[in-house]
Amino acid sequence: MSISEAIATARQRIDAASAARGRTESVTLELAVKTRTPEECREAARALADAGAPILLGHNRVQEARASAEAIREVAGARVHLIGPLQSNKINHALSCVDVIESLDSADLAAKIDARATGSLPVFVEVNVSGEPTKHGCAPCDVRPLVEAVAASSHLELAGFMTVGLNSPVEVDVRAAYARLRDLRDQAARDLGTGEDALALSMGMSRDLEWAVAEGATIVRLGTAIFGARRA
Ligand SMILES: *Cc1c(COP(=O)(O)O)cnc(C)c1O
Image (cartoon, rainbow, N blue to C red; front, side, top):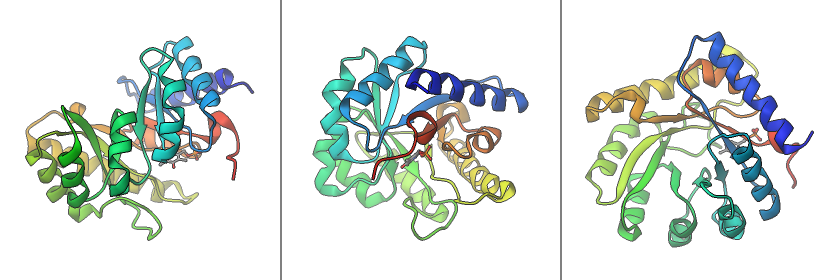
C-alpha cells in the first residue's frame, strides 16, 4: 500500500469511528514519523496535501525533526509537532524546527522552554493517564499546577492535552484512560474559562484510534498504519 492509500484508509477508519459516535467535529490525522527518512516525511506531507488534509507530522526525536525539517518545509503549510520527550539540552534545537510541543510534562520543563522561547509557542500537556511506569507524561494530579505554570508563562500557550494510551487489548480499560484525559481537558477548560473546543485532545494510535475517537480525540497520531512496521 502506498502512503497515499494508507492515508485514505486511515481517514476512512477515523470518519467511520466519528460517524458511529455521531461526532460532527473533524478529527485531524497526525502522522507519527519516527525512524522515517526526510524523503519519506516529505512524501507523506505531500500525500496529506494532495488529500486536502491538514499537513501535520509528529516527531519523537528532536534530532530527527531537525534532520527532516528542510524536506518537510518544502511542502507549503506543513506543521511539525514534537510528540516525544524533550530534554532540556535540546530545547533550542526543538524551538528551531517544531511548531508545537505536545510533550510538556513538568513545570520545570515549562520554565526552561519559556526562558528560551520567543513569540508564542503552543504546547500540549502530556499526561500519563494509564499510570504505566514506562510512559512519559505528568501524573493526573499534577495537571492543574502545570496548566497554571503555562498560564503564568510569558510565551507558552496551552493548546491541548496528549497521552500515549494504555497498552492493552481490553476496550473498556483503554477507553477509560482516554476518558480520563478528556475529563482533565474539560476541567482545565473550566478552570481557564475557555471552551473545551479550544483545547485539542491528541490521543489514539494505529491499534486503537477508534476507541480514542469514541472518547473525543481531536487528533490521532498514526505511525504503523501509514508506514508499516517501524525500523529498528
Ligand atoms: C510511535 C508513536 C505513535 C504512533 O504509534 P503507531 O502504533 O505506530 O501508530 C503515536 N504517538 C507517539 C508518541 C509515538 O511515539
